[in-house]
Image (cartoon, rainbow, N blue to C red; front, side):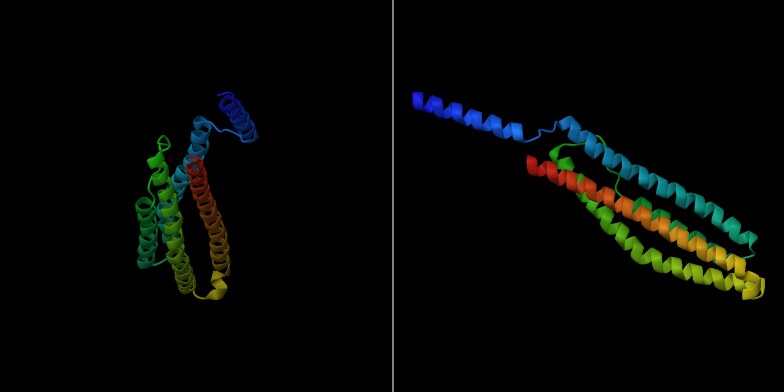
Length: 193
């Protein structure tokens, strides 16, 4: 009996030592961490939709003032409409308040799906943007009577395309990294349980 009691004391002492070596994270801290990533994910999505809606409204007006043909204006509106629809349909909203184990799996799956779909959009969006820019250059040259008369507009279009591409890729990477952080955090929590 004394032997069992002494063995239990040693095991408790060993357990206390191991617990002292490991940081114990509260459920509230975990929820705050994942909640922060999820809020950022949802905020980025809202910002993307607002930017696309603003461009969808303003671009046709700018193109019309440049005397660009109506067919090209409709092509531009259609492109942005497809982008908005894709954004709405391809991203599942992640609830910031649900953190049970089954919800963790769902959150991780939604984040992984978002990464995959954003990559798919790039496969469509980058070539489509290049085609749009080429058609825009062609129409600007045609409307203004040659390259000489269109140099500043073409330089502005190329500069805008480059800046827009850089901003788009940065937003893509930010969104992807945020989704990966959600997945990593969920996996870390699930491995501890």
